[in-house]
Image (cartoon, rainbow, N blue to C red; front, side, top):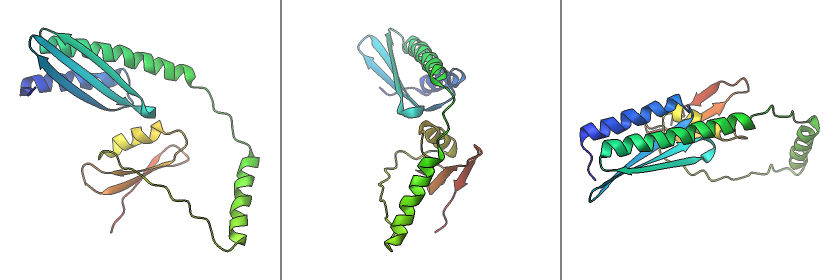
Length: 174
């Protein structure tokens, strides 16, 4: 359905308050549908760790459907946040033996005269802001960098997580 500006702003305002319940939301899609006398609102929230949460509600009034869907999504976000907090435990420190093994492999490669090149294809999803890129990078457990298309500048950017927890935004100049 084609949403009016008032309906659109109402839905966006309601959805924007969901960040109070869970602050690691990457994006939310709002789908409004009208079928005869039923008004349907579906919210699809994209969270960290590639988690997707869907809430849907229907009512006679679109505003009521939006409210019901937001309430359902809010409950799911609170549950997800509680589960994340329960699972969080201090990570065990890795032993030095693993680091020594990786160093010896690289030394063997240099002995052969040619370093091995590992190729990785990177599929860029949607353009995102640096703040969204930070959320996306946080969703990856073992990665320290993310290559993304900056939505504002429409340029390729690299976000690097430093060992002290800060982030470095690398802006290539061609």
